[in-house]
Length: 285
Image 1 (tube, rainbow, N blue to C red):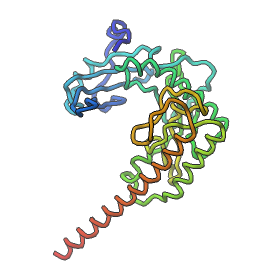
Image 2 (cartoon, helix red, strand yellow):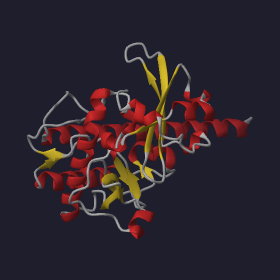
Image 3 (tube, rainbow, N blue to C red):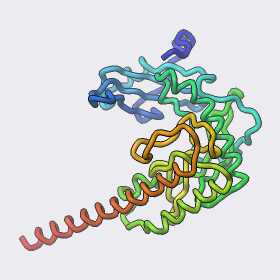
C-alpha cells in the first residue's frame, strides 16, 4: 500500500477496543482457488480520520485488539476525501438522523482502486445534488455532505433499515413482487428521463421503506448516457463488462432482480412447507 507510509506510521494508534468498533472487517481470498489470503479492516473515528489495516494469514474471527492496533495505519485525507467546493452541507439535525455514506476505504491496499476513490466520491456527491433538485420517491433522499478539514468526508442519506438483498431474512411476511418491481421501474424511468443510467442496480443497492416501497441507492456509477464509467456493474447482475453508461445496463439488471425475487419467494414457500410438514410429523408422533 503506497500511501505515504512514514506519515501514517507517525500518527497515534486509534482508540479501537473491540472488533465491533471497526467500520469494515472482511477476508480476501485467492480469486482462482478460493484460498484464504488475509483479513482487512477499516476504522473511521469521530473526526472522520480513516484507518486501514491488513493481517496476512489471520482469519477475521481470530483477530485480537492487539492485532488491529498493530496493523491499522492512517490513510491521508487526500487519498480518499475530495476537496469540498460547492456542495451543500448537511444540517446538524439532519446529520443526526441520517446514514452517512463514506468513501470506499476498504480498497486502500489496491493501488489502482484507491486512486479513483476521491473522484468517484466527488462525482456521486454531484449526482446526488442534481437528483435532490429532481426528487423521486423511489430514489434515496439526500441531505448534503459532511465536511472536515476542507474535504467531503461523507454523504448524508435518508436512513432505511431493510435492504432488498436481505428482505426475506429480515421480514417475515411476503413481498409484493409486482409492486416492488413497479417502484424500481418508476425510479429508473425517472433517472432515464434525466439522461442518467444507474449502471449498478442489484438487491444490495435497493432499500425498502416501512411500506415495502423500494428506494434506489448507491449512485457511484450513475452517469449520463454514453459517459465513461470509473466503476459499474456487479458480478451476477450484468451480462457483460462495460465501460460506458447506458440504459440497457439498468434494463438487464431489473430483469435479473425480478427473476431473483421470484426465486427467493419460491425458496421461502418451500421452506415454510417443510417446516409445516415437520411440525405435523412431530405432533403425529
